[in-house]
Image (cartoon, rainbow, N blue to C red):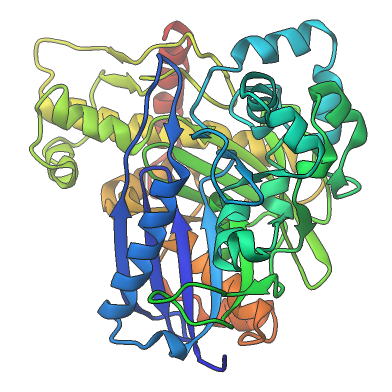
Length: 499
């Protein structure tokens, strides 16, 4: 194929978004297709892999139609995906051994607890940069091999294949049971509890602890190279389009924001908030309860990152809408918050599903404090936005401490749906005391996949070419005075302590 456009597949937790972009990263077509969430038991979250695949094929068709583009005009395909979600499928048929276990699934909490009791936590932390938590793929796969009839035997024989969603999609797009390519990129591999940060390979010692046979694991590849070409997708895509870019969603967003230098950081505002800081060639092991991960591998160069996640961000605004009925649409929160000059004595801790980094307190609960007789809806709305910004600031400031020997945080890029909220972005800049930079296209996860694919296909010559294609929308400069900021931070710290 010799087309000039890029197809970027962003396979997310609730739906799949596909962008068609031109070589200047201008979006020519866009489509999103949602699919069913499955909750078999409390704490269990699953997806039907066939539902995911159908959402991908529908979104591709719709995006190409919206772009008024023939599939033959595509020159590359990039993939980014919900990370940690685990699929095990039969190599001969493509049929899943069971539903995919989603990253949110908590059924392996007891398995993680047992591994900690057996003294394995430091081993996993040192080799993978991760904590022993059901969030990651390793214990999910171990559960499948233990609980699904015949799965272990098939996995040991290489007849059952494991993958995160990136692996599953590449396999399907390149022919599936008729010779599909079984690979994963370094960024996704680094989220499995089975992959060594130092050696960039599956770690036999970790596989032994988890009881996982290497025969079922995908080959690990870089984030920008030709993995294979489309095959057997009649009516959707022609044969021969190269798949040549791949990264987990948050790493793709970091790349899509052109955060290529040590100290460059981004915040993605979605249901939660996800922060990554590029630490360059250095593996920085956190002393502040953050995660160390692979950012990407491009042209033989590996970049690492520190990561921290806040479980609730945009979901806090949804709670104001659906729970308290203070607003009718999420977009109204900014106007409501601007009806007051400040939040007064009101403080909101958005720990509606516990606190993530750097506290890691699943027992914490959301807290709305400091209410007085003159508190009104505007104070609560503003406190909600402040709470989102303050929890993010805690994480980014912890990153800055961890990365002292590598780089310092000078600014941060922002993206995701809530990045459109100007007041929230201003508050974020204020509490961090650094500029927050918003791009013209805030769907940077998909843009990152497109950039990686462009590099893999040779459409971009190097990182400088990608950086030149990135376009700034607005810079939010900090303007809050230090005494006001310090008072806000103290108020926050007191509230978090009792949440």
